[in-house]
Length: 108
Image (cartoon, rainbow, N blue to C red; front, top):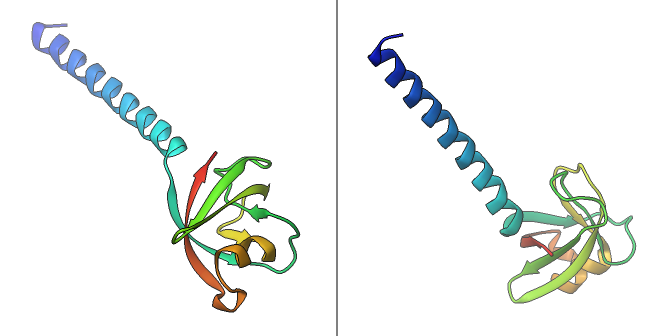
């Protein structure tokens, strides 16, 4: 392998390492940061719980905020496409008649 070939290989390896570091850093940042999502209530959950997307483990505590109101709920079920709050949890953030609200979710 010539001199140019070695430089190409070194640059390729450095690029691959940079990509891996960037992907890892993004996952770490996502785990600690909050997300803004749509939330609704489903009418069949009891207590302060939420059916949450798969990124949150079942049983984990999530802080859910809407405007200046914040509550802490437990992830009851994972793998859902949206946040389905229990009636009790939703009513602490907004009237049930609203139906869908935008919330900020942070894992605690």
